[in-house]
Length: 209
Image 1 (tube, rainbow, N blue to C red):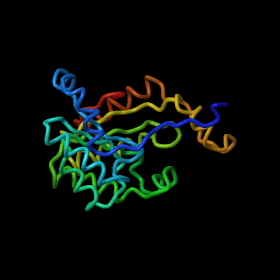
Image 2 (tube, rainbow, N blue to C red):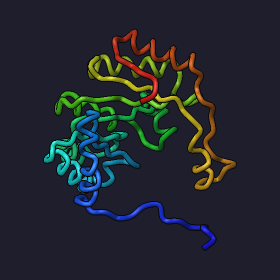
Image 3 (tube, rainbow, N blue to C red):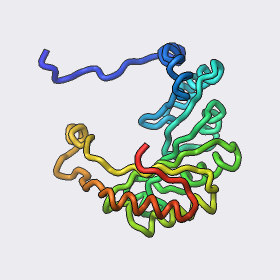
């Protein structure tokens, strides 16, 4: 009665999820869209994700996932067999800095990304959150662009995502505010400079998305 607690989700079977998304199939057909599984992290629930995606693929609905790529390759491969597009998060190319910021190194993430591209040949959109003071240095962005151009290829698209503060109220409800993460949003000029840098490497980049 005091609204101190509220239900924000419910358990569903893969078939129930499919029926829900299939109700919009006419919209997908008209817009060229489809179904995207994000999270959280898709590969935390690989069997469920694979079941939902298979139902979509079997019924000609375009499928996509968004992932940070931190999972065992055997787990990822089973899910990716039902995926048409991978949206892949890259947060920092230096593994030491990556671990400082996220709590985990990035070697597995980068190796999985290369396997998706070279082994499975799936279309990839790399999504890079631009977080001032953490990963927005020219050194890191150049290293990221070089990795994409040299270890993958220039067909891989990049979305540069400026950090925004819209989720901070939710975070404050979950964390010790005194020790909470804090930064500012990058300026339009900073974002445009980074976009042009990726384009200099021949990579198609866009801001947002």
